[in-house]
Image 1 (tube, each protein chain N blue to C red):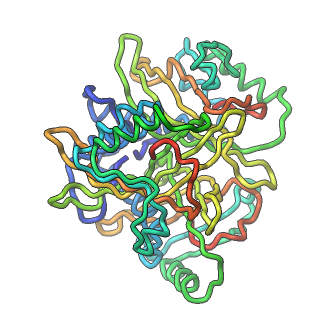
Image 2 (cartoon, rainbow over the protein chains, first blue to last red):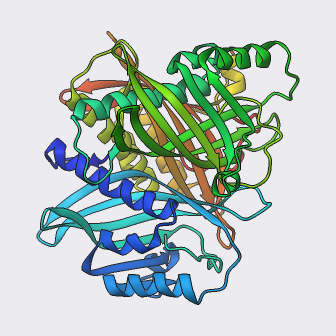
Length: 165
Length: 165
Length: 165
């Protein structure tokens, strides 16, 4: 369920459409359909994975940073064609999706995420968890992410971050 | 929130009824009310727990397999009366429940699941996670599972799988 | 999504308002806004964190127990001003929120929770999981918790329980 921050009123239908967008995002990545992943973003967009520590100290360095849909596509191509990594399965869950504000630049939402990772012949493990700060826009009738920032709680650099969050 | 796949339109009320079914399923198992668990399935049904590896390689072997409500009931009786196992608590969470298609044989849904397990005097641990492929039917006004397939991400056989997923 | 137990009928709007309350609760704690946390409770309220074992054996001892909003505020002040503890981040997720009954004393709900904890230079870990038994009241147009009982699955006393659940 998409929740709405105190003081905001929105149409039930918008809640449902936002829920569909967030679920589509998790489904694409959980199903390994990386090639479709960029289609959930606006053409000009911010995608960032950054440790919470950096955010709190105002440090800009992110472990992944893209600023257009094309850069996201590049990322997928690189991952498919050049990256070397041990096989693994990443399973993501998203909870507490909350519409915080509607501004001229879009709808601002936050959420919590956790990713479980499974390596062959290993039990599944909690890999990363944290919060999302997102901005969603209505792109000619389709909701798309204009911004997705994943802020992970750990201070350890997740060297094994292979798939996009 | 039940999400709806792109291109599908459904009544808000159906979203709510599906959410209620999925939540009832998790609640019954989390509360240990195993005897009521078969009532959430159609009389003829498929229930399967299978490793992702097998699904991807087209191998049919499942670690649990039932094809009727009666077989599910048998399973519960066996668990209550004959199975020997160390006490444990299983807590399940289900996210990203998504109605993917409505076909003549029912509504096709997917979801992500994770199960945390707690043994006495041990901290809680992630036990299994994976995806569900489900089919839900309207059984004279009541939604029931005609099919629930739990596909877990790990390649390790969960020997300690005692309670149904 | 807030689910509704079998046999109960409620307005879709109430589902949404309850979802907003639960999400606001998780957001306040995940964002570290402890000072606002008591505002989600009624002036007279029960807040309890108790091991499942004690609940099942009818033992009343809880590891945290407050019976008014003022006691919750005291707890926050103590935490901010006197408690000594290693820095950590707690991230909570809540699933399977279910309205079970509407009684003269309020709406009775249950939910599942899990808390992931992250210590500096450590990977994130599952800290606690369990169930909630809650009572929610309409307090002059605002939904508030009249009772929140967190029943954690583990029998180990979580000595490092610093932040409220």
